[in-house]
Length: 172
Image (cartoon, rainbow, N blue to C red; front, top):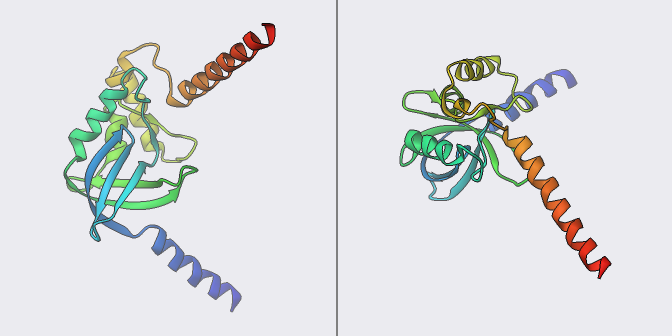
């Protein structure tokens, strides 16, 4: 009986987590974050699942934002909530134009990295490898830096600047 109850609970939980939602994309924050207007007129910020685009201040950051905008801004989409991130944004899989998966299209076009830390979809890895090989998008830059390395570098620079400032006051 316990086993059957667990199966039923898991079934309904998965239905809630992966239920499809229709929305209109009304804002593009960056290459991998959009704002959706839901049927009840509420807005929800959606962080794309399985892809990480360059940061705004990174080379190709604006290109990634423009690419995402060209695909979904003002359009009706279907999305599935996957989880929430530490910033309380919804991580979502977004589909547009007859079931095109937005994260895959970004990766194929070279405007984002396959986010392997949160994805096991090896097809996305293949798309990234092909984009690299064909030097699409950001892969035209032989020194392309992943967003996670860029964020880490910025954090370290910020710490170093803060320490330098503290040392200035200590030495005077």
